[in-house]
Image (tube, rainbow, N blue to C red; front, side, top):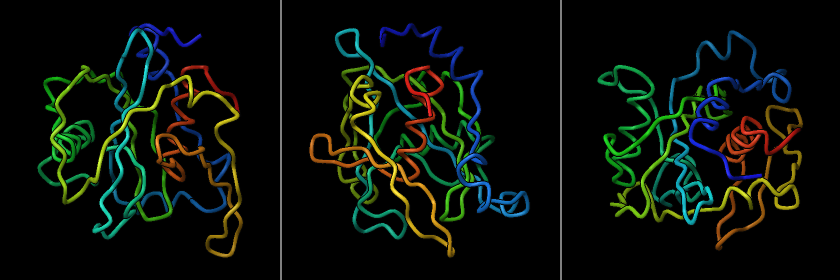
Length: 202
């Protein structure tokens, strides 16, 4: 089931688009979305023994936003970035030392607004493995990999409702893996990837 070829991944990613309105439409009107700051994240896929994994980071506890959370490498678009692809690649190199020339970008999953004021475009890519990561301690505590098969198992994640702006909204939580818990916006992006690859259905 999970022996996906690179061509299959690329086609699946490029034909998928996140539909955030199904879950958060009451929170993000068109006016609100139009005023969010643009950002990009990279969802790095890597192959070990013919099985796909994704690479995640644990953010530094000293950061202002999302401190200590499990996340994908990424950040806000800067003036010098020609597009959001470059934003994601730049941020990934700054955070964990993966050089853009070593990355194969499959495409993106569309745009997803998040409650901290960003409109994020998640890019799916492949990185070579093994790879010597250069962790930026100012931004990242550590990086770790998780098998795609584990993430695709519905027993390993759930939705809980949390209150925001006077309303209750579903938030995705994965079980702990290797001592880390993936939840929130990064977990939503992970489910979007699984949905795009036809490994999960809401």
